Image (cartoon, rainbow over all chains, first blue to last red; front, side, top):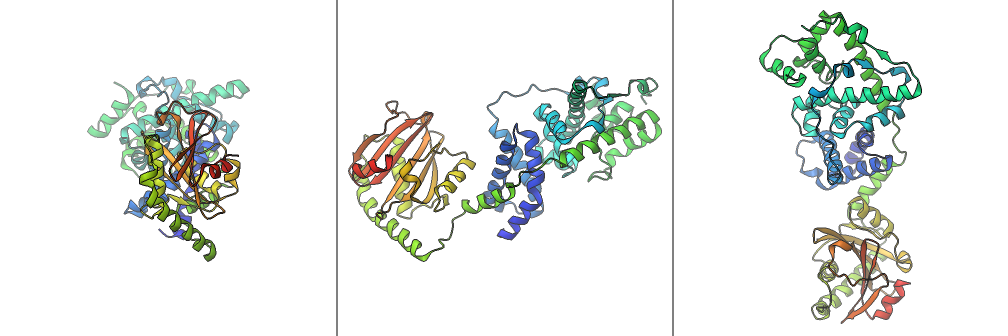
Length: 182
Length: 265
């Protein structure tokens, strides 16, 4: 890859990669380091990728693997299956008008990592959900499951922050009374 | 049966979908996104159109998702990250020496060191050296006689330190003061006891070379190492080895240990 091609790849991907990294890492410095390391990996191993249209997926996969590798010695979060989601968690939404980037990032970082990675990729809109499954190297059903559970957890975190700040919470319990199931 | 298994059963069997299953699937849906036309979403979308309660939930959910996307995309990226990536990757590749004089001077120094080193290494490495030290000197000799290449090359040691840090290789928290003023040649890493060892080579003003080796203390078995450098002459090689925190350091040059001592100040 020529220097120009490499620069174009950096220009196109460093910002979304950093935003993915910053949701995974606990600090901006760690995220910048993770992003930089990902491009170093590309510089040393990227030539092995024959299909250059897959460069974006390669970078996101490499970053995620690097993140997992760095924290492999940390305590893993216990596995939480979607079945444990309470219906009310899925039916209460925070007041989106009261949100800002800092609050979203803070809440996202509080969501357990297995859910955080697919959530961030989903919201960054860089990949289809099938591509997210490839990047994270999990089945499609697992991505859907983690998105569903992850959103519920994210709403919980945002709601708890709103409660602290006294913001209005928009609930849907009243609407659910007449909800049909089929 | 859980939501996940219900939804997957539906996808596989085409059975009737309820709102709970529809929500599970629609949570992965992004209007106008890459997978908006994915047939897996078709029935869930149809269900949302049929059921006003589900439609209301879906509409609110999309608004929530859009707000999350907007806020995530608004996260500021550090101003210097792009430059840092481009410069960092550049120094990880072998550099072309810009000045012919510098290039020839370094080539001459490397050649001289190679001749001396290859003649003396076998005789000079005594059993008193630990395994990691022996391997370090072999690595240095291999570099100077051209049998191996630096992992990264730069005249500025700080760039090499950055490269090593980025590659999770051990680095000195602070270089010995008299090394800081020297021009570096390059760095190389190797594994010892499953831990990375970093080697940085510097050009001395007198035309010789000096090498700084760093690794984790846990990787070496020498428990006698202290904070004060232990200077030892091994034939033509002079080495100074010490421990600082969780790392051990070795400074090595071909010459008398008095010369080495001047770089420890």
